[in-house]
Image 1 (tube, rainbow, N blue to C red):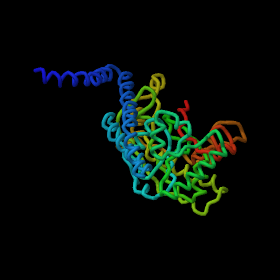
Image 2 (cartoon, helix red, strand yellow):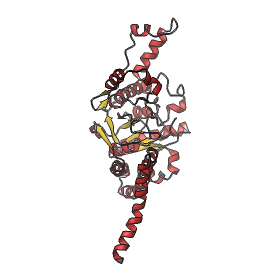
Image 3 (cartoon, one colour):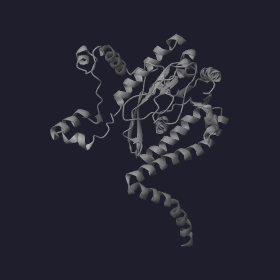
Image 4 (cartoon, rainbow, N blue to C red):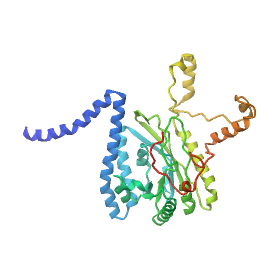
Length: 363
């Protein structure tokens, strides 16, 4: 008996956290949310700790830029089972084109699950230099991450130039987020793009490979962390050979337009719940019709906006002489093209030479 008790007692103590987490998860929706957040962050921390050995080994073997692939695979294998969140990828064969600038839309911390599934071999991340002094800093340095000084435009440009030379010499790709910060909401949209990554692509003559992750508001937002499938589509490479800095705005518009179109195509439209007052005057037949209009097949359809025809514009209420401005606004919104260089206004010299990665969530 003494032998078995020596084995069973440690197992009982080790299983205690799982029992507590299970009880909290079943207690209430809020308890379930915080439990799943704890599991997610715990997995991130555990894999980050274990990855130091992997990074050290591959760095010793002269393959530091493969670290992200193996660590990402390890993370996705674990967290997808723990949280029952799977990633379905379409067009992954396009990532075989190397070297390239990989650009993805940035939504939340759950993007790590997508990176875990999609990350190809021979790929490094672009990050702000401050991350070098965080707990993940040693791992990032061992994995060949490229750090950018966002506070100094001159040094940022030098870093980008060094990064492009490194990419060509070692035949590696760079993964970045052109929005510069995370953005997740019920609407299917993206923030305006920063120009740094496009400068980098044109100067090096490297193709841009867009990676579009569907809006996963239905799986994760404040107070909710559910399970399900996240769809990702890798678009064909967009060549930049022969382009000059004067073509940056056109290139940025083209890439963003393709990504927005794909985002709308693969996303589930997340509708905010309708209030009780709004439903009082709606008949059951009308409500059923609305449901059939929104839901189609196994996914939720996103209806494109009506074209800005003269008839539609005349039906809009407003003062006389406003049709021109309405038409301009409607056309811009349909194309998904920002008329300004950034969210806060026109681009400055500092914005143009920088790639902004991993700022805090913008509420």
